[in-house]
Each structure stands twice: as C-alpha cells, then as structure tokens.
Length: 282
Length: 115
Image (cartoon, one colour):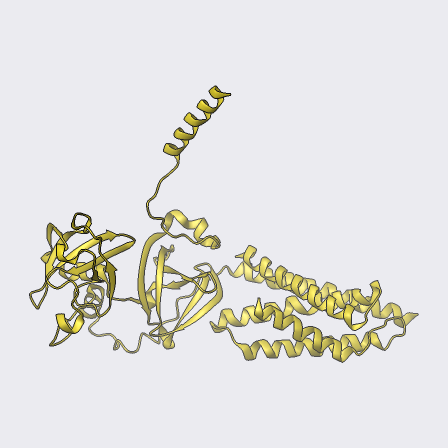
C-alpha cells in the first residue's frame, strides 16, 4: 500500500511538470467553429477598434466564410478585436466576442480603425524610449498610483501599490513627454498589462499633467494611409463606390440548402395534399 | 457553413414542433391524424420561413424585425388556410383553426426570439 502511494505520488509529480503551465491564460472562443478550424492561422491582436465602414455601418458576420449576419455596428462603434485571420484574397478579418451573448463575429478589418493605444504610442514615439529599469517612487507604497494606457491618454486605472517598497513594480523603459514629465512603462503588474506611470507625479490627473492642451497622438497607420491616398475621397466618406467586403460564401452550398428546403416543403406539401385527397375520395 | 445552416434549420424546426405541438394538444387536438397535420404544416412552413429570413439578412446585411413579422404573418395565413381546410372534414377534429394558427405561431415565434 505504501509503495503504491509512493509510486502514485511520483507519477503525480511528473504529471505536474508535463502539464503546460501558463501564468495568464489567453482567451480563446469555445464556440466558434471557424476559429477552431483556422486556429493556427489566426493572429492574436486584442486591441480596440472603431467601426468605419461604407454606408455608415460595419456588418458582423458569422465567419469569413459564412455570410450570416451576427450584428450591425454603426460607424463610431468601438469594439475589441481579439484575433485576425487573412483569407486567400489577402482580406484581413477580425474576430470580436460579444460578452453579453457570448457570440463571436467577424468583420473586415478594412472597415475598422485602431483606437490609439500603447502599441500606437510605441510606433509613434518608440525611438524616444530609453531602456532603463526604474522603480515607482517609494513614497507611493501603500497608496494608489495612476496607470495610463500611454502618456497623454485621458483615462487611467488607479492601482493600489504594495505596502513594502521592495515589492513596488519596476518600469522597463522610460519616456519624457512634451511637458517634460518622465514616464515609466510597466509590462505587467498584478493582472494589469502594458501601462505607463508618470514617475514625476504618479497620482496626478490629466489636467494636472497637461494643463494647456491634450498632447497630439496620431496612429501611424492613419499617417501612412493619408499620405499615400492624397487623391482619394475624404476620410468622412469611405469609398461608397466599391462593393462591400463580404464573406466568400459558397454559392453551391447556398443553392444546395435552397434545394433541400424546397424539396422538404414539396414533399410535405405533397403529403398534406395526399391526406386531403384521401379524405375527399372517401 | 453547411453544418451551421443545418443546425440552424434543425433547431428552429425542432423548437417549433415542440411548442406548436404542445399548443395544439392543449388546444384540444387529439389523435395521431390531427397531430400529424400539425406536424406536417410546420415542416412545410418553418424551414421555408427560416430560409427566406436567412437569405434576407445575408443580402440585406442586417436583421429586421418588420421582415420577421411579415414572414410570420404569411406563415400564419398559410397555416390558417390549411387548418381550415382540414377542419371542414369530419374525419379531422381541429377546433378553432384560425385561433390555433395564431396562438401557436405567436408563441413559437416569441419563444424563439427569447432564446
């Protein structure tokens, strides 16, 4: 008996090492058959985008191959895109999850504009970052510190700091903004990811940090597009003349379904007529 | 996509048969013949209604409550016609066919929307 327990304990220890261990799980949809089929080709994105489609709307489809409509977003609607997938025509599709209905949907990324975030900030100002390890000031221990998406963001999260200075989060890189404030970047701290802290004034709000005006932040994608499409229509009216990007639905499948349904209806109608005729004869 | 569509049609039809079959039973329909009429009527109308609405939202790019209502109205009219046709025959007992068609479809549509 004791030997058996020892063997089982050793086996359990081995199993622990064999099991994949992840400190933070990456969310995956569990009821999206398209994602399950193309999982290896999907890219993790997890960023917010604003809808900007033709005719003032973006249509959310069941999948890049299924034109069933899941939802319709008016332009201006902000949605999180968790994964993207590129089809054979080079069209990039983004996956969104509706947390209320737990239903996923896919949109053409051509109609989505990224909401300025820490990635955009790095693309725009990355060359001014300094790689250095700096801790948040010790006097903040035991208090709440403001974590911003990026220097110049309008909203922040107030995160309580550890009681002891030794446990204070470390910033991996720093940046000095237009007002001369020094900021530190924190990749991860107690579940909060990719945030910036104003090291000079960790608890200052936006108007204190930027009393004159909000600093200008421009997504680099928008900069590249506007310079390369100088002769195109204005940004307020996306190309109305082009056909809307829709899933490449298999016409044969749709035709088959129509035939099946009509066949069933025909057979059922025949059965009903047969029952009626029988009674009429009698 | 085909599995998705078959599942969509299957679930819709099954739900409809359950709800309308129950309504028919509570309405007073008894016997295999009478309940068979209810079953066949719904197999005739439901998949077609689901198909028409699915094609609409695919090509229109949006869901539409008014379109759903119109399709349901057509379904009700067809079912009224069929139920009345069978009710006129002594061998089938389908009481108040107009009321049956309306109540059964309103309930099945309402439950479908909630789910």
